[in-house]
Every structure is written in structure tokens, then in C-alpha cells.
Length: 132
Image (tube, rainbow, N blue to C red; front, side):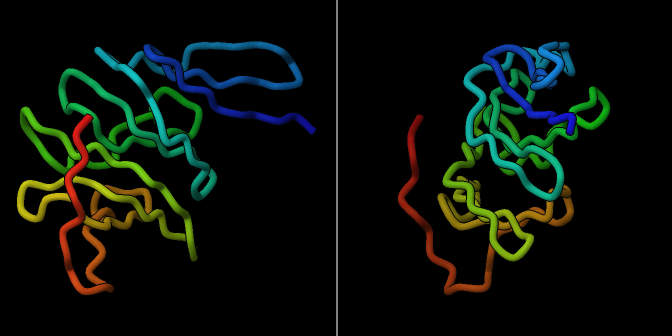
């Protein structure tokens, strides 16, 4: 069986063909730094990475250039949401993130922009804001 894994580096997102031993560039993330929270989700990889355009936000990749993209810019502008603490349960990605309206709180995502929103299933309370 041919196994494909995904590896993020500080500058590029690379698919790694484990058995073939080959590496190729999928997409250069402009100004990217410190990719983290690499999490398999729905046949894709979700991650957090910094880009000059959006700051530190939630991204996703299917291992192709076209399929490697921002999920949602939760906090547009000079600030960024800095998502972390990823957990997948019941086909939903849960994570903590900063937003301009509520500070740090629990979010949920189905992997799409429209399906990424604060989780209002629990009493809405802000979490302490994490500084990077």
C-alpha cells in the first residue's frame, strides 16, 4: 500500500511519499513561519501557519497546490486568531482561537469557511487569551 503523509516545514508544505522516498513542493506559503497543530481531519490535514497576509490562522491541505489553502481568517487585520488545542470528535474539528468580539473561545469547523464558527453548544465564555 502506498502511504502518503504530510509534513509542514517553516517555509513550505510538502507531501511525503513514504514508501517511494520522494519529496516535492505542494505550495509555498508566502512569509510562512512555524506551522503547527498538524491534525488529520476528514481525509485532509488541518494546520496553523503564519502568512504575511493573514497572520497565524487555520489552513487545510489535501496534498495538492490547489487544495492547500486558508480555511478562515478568524481575526482579520494586524491581529490573528492563533488557533490551537485541536481535537477531532464526531467528525468535527474543535479548537481554541482568539476573535475580536469574544477573545479566546472554543471554535468548531467542518473544514470549510462557512462551517468554521464559535461553538455555542456550551455556555459562551471567553478563555484566557494566549499570547504568542
